[in-house]
Amino acid sequence: MFTYNASVHLRYLLLLNALTALVPALLLKGREHDPLLNAHWWPHDNHSAVLVVCIATIVGTGLVYLLLRRKITRWWAYCLCGAITGAFPGLFYVIAMPRADWAKAPDAWSAVFTGMMVVGFIWGTLIGLVTFGAVGRRKQLAAS
Image (cartoon, rainbow, N blue to C red; front, side, top):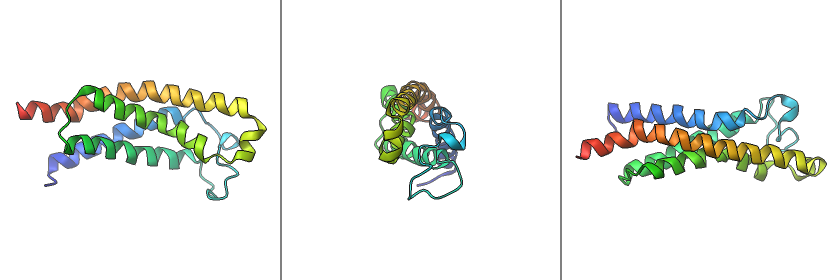
């Protein structure tokens, strides 16, 4: 049953996961550095980081919600979910970037995306601990 406390936890999760995905996405600043600038399926005038952060937030929240539903209260599981959410923007851009744009400067894009994944993995692991303290630990304390 979806209670008021569950909705508050869901808001915490959405906020924490958005912060987790936002930090690595900030490595791509400006419209000229948008990896999806020439993608045919992304014709919007907005920067593609909006799309990436939203998708990563939904994926991360879904993973943590799955942990809560399965009653998994291990700290490392929440750190792993945070690391996946943090590394998601870099992985998304590696997969979704048009190959013609990648071929123009493969070394530069590889360095940027690798940096995004490393920063996202570390930042996501730290935010995973915060998520465990905010959501996962409460379930563990309530059970005892």
